[in-house]
Amino acid sequence: MPTSRSSRGFVAAAMLGLAGCAVEREAHLYPINEAANATGLIEGKTIGHGQGHGTIEGTMPDGEHLQGEFSIVFGGSVGFGNILATANSAAGSVTASGFSTSVAISGSGQGSAVLSGDRGTSIECKFLNNNLTGHGYGACKSSKGGLYRMVY
Image 1 (cartoon, rainbow, N blue to C red):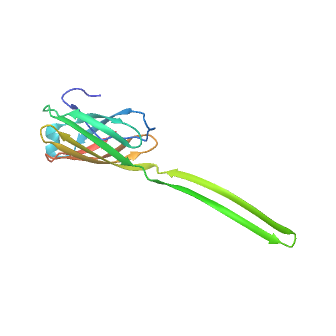
Image 2 (cartoon, one colour):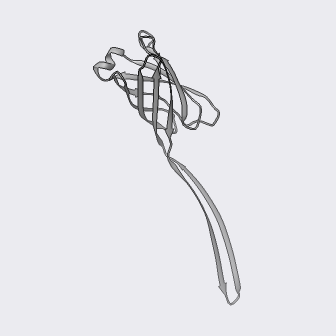
Image 3 (cartoon, rainbow, N blue to C red):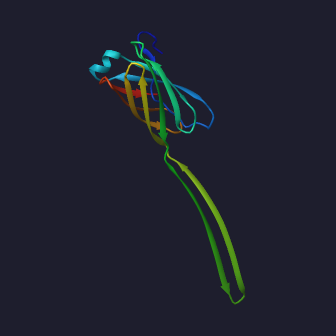
């Protein structure tokens, strides 16, 4: 991991985690326009608190401290149902019943992150998360006009 003039900052990253388990992730923001080139590559860390939510903290190269949070909507479905049946004949009747449940989780989730700095900078990120591996990619925009590709 490069440690030169890049900031130890922030980035929205997320993973499908168990409730109550904190998971730390590294992520990188790669500049894609001139305003972002002035900042350079931004390295960051997030702490996932489980169930698609976490906090972000970092410092911009000029020393501005940033804090924020991220959230992921996982998608999926839950199903349940009963089935009851009765058959009648001259020999008598027969009754049967059954119950079923199912849960499906989507392979990817949509995420959003917001950070604000102690000197007025704000950053907003949108990303796609792989719900099985906890890795993903997205895009971020700073209030100073910087555009970044995010990879984690």
